[in-house]
Length: 407
Image (cartoon, rainbow, N blue to C red; front, side, top):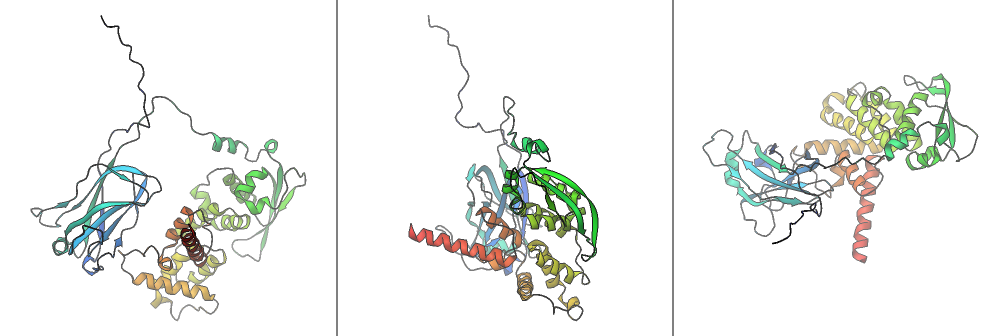
């Protein structure tokens, strides 16, 4: 008689997949399809969209791709994972006739695919171009993108998260955990009129020099760890300095606070080298500012003086779209020459097809968000004017090519 077998706990290699999600569908519209480039190998890209925590885009070849197996006269279409992390997902493209539901739907069906970063999956010969032209709705090609993926498997037990962020916040403005002291207040520039200065009551703040060195380098350079002398900070409102210091310790500054103090935060963050806080305040300022013919020039000069490329781009777009209202009503005599180049870029970009993204190597037509993302992905500084960002990306690309040739 065989002895009873005691079954022990299973051993898992890697994390088991969770249950499959429901299908998620996004419609991607390519307007003016008939007028898109028809040369083989020329692509048109959709804007990025989010699904399952990843960024995606659709790449369409109206005249067909150049990969092996691509047939003449066929449309090629691919789905790209733009996020730096890989993901396994089921996906399919669906093209339906806009009015006649009895007509055949074109559909790609795939088993689960592994999308690595910046890689695309799709169909070389999705449909004949002459057929696709009969499936347009007022000139627009509408593709349905269907996605589903495995949900994250639920953990069998409670696993606490990394406490570092919370522990850092415990040291915020804590005198016992700090080695530098600031006295903030005195005269602060008035937002309404920068020639006037308002008096504020000085406020004492405590901080750790190492935290400042990592997150506010210019502020760290103003003091020495262990020095008992208090460092005076003028020209900054104590409440703004408090928000800035809180951000350095890993805290989040709310959108309402950013909106109420946008320019003051930009001024302080720019002064002390807190780039991400500056760009967060800039994003809120850009969103909440209504650009008009009357305020356009003042906003443009301010954005240029602080290297607020995103805010400046919004103003440039306004100039490009409202040239007939601006000419003769606004003088550009005091505008720096580099801004004229940016205005011409905005006008040229506006003339491009709204469905057509800038080629990956055509930096001069890229939106500020795209430039900043490329810089961030390469570990480069994302603070600077549009020209500075383009120059930095160009230098980095040249360096990469040199390194590749030497290898």
